[in-house]
Length: 387
Ligand code: UDP
Image 1 (cartoon, helix red, strand yellow):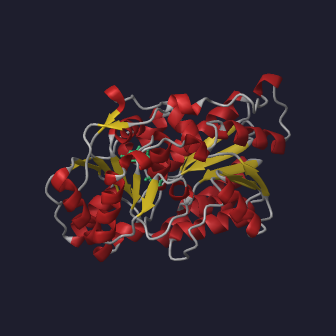
Image 2 (cartoon, rainbow, N blue to C red):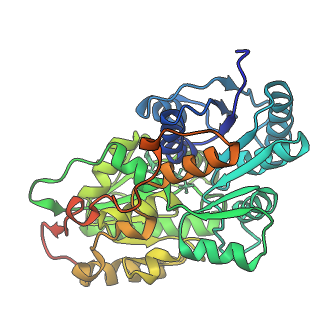
């Protein structure tokens, strides 16, 4: 591994692997020499290896985390990446999202004299209680290149007068979904409720988690409820001594394709996940966001999701509203997240930043957008329902 490297791309968790995959593919197509680093935040097959394999990615470097608490993991990732950057001397470091990995990658890049590019820049929930918000703010403040997924994110960055160059790229979540689109359900008929929960703010808090579980218990009285359980939620269930509400079916975390197949078949999704919220809007699955605030207001303003809060009654009421007025909420709005070419736009901007000459056929044809409306048809449901 002695060749010169243009870009070191850093990924630590499941959503980072998914959303970085389209960028890596587009960089490769342009012949930009990129190496991939795993920080070990997520490390097992179910939460990480599976996703690398799904997108045909291989790690060139893997850090081993000695510590998994918030401070310890930040310090280890920071020093591990710092050493690697000094050794490999990339011209640009890229990281995606809002995890400890992203924040540490931004600092490590700056402290070792590398430029830093932030994919999915500019998201703001305007709550400093969320660790993710601090990661985003730090990463954006330090970035040389900022790839805003939506106009709202771009406006947040311009309000903060960030120093780096801001690009409106779209969100690579759509590109990743199009890399292995879900199987259409026969008759496009939806049934059941899909659940994902993993955020520290939801599952670490005993009271909030118990409220969410009670709400799931109510939903499960009349609907199939399927919950591919994140390891953090599983560990917190045990730690808090909680029982699963009856009729809620739990599985291990699913692979990306499998998860999208469940999402496109569901009547609604109850989630605190950022990526699942975005994919739900793309696929026309109404989203009940179990959050007190969100850095992703796009689905709310588009009228395809509800911010339900984290109390039992709020969640039950939101689900009732969505299920009663299902046709109004069940609308695919993929254009919220761009045209499916965010990875290409990001790679193009990186190439220009690096001064890499690209073949004419690699330059972007902005007119040639994916025909998304024909790709995602309006959903139907198996039976009209309410709670
Ligand atoms: N996901 C998955 N399998 C699952 C649950 C989620 O592949 O069982 C995917 C989902 O499609 C989305 C991403 O994981 O692309 C979201 O990750 P997560 O909820 O862990 O993090 P967040 O998006 O909130 O940062």
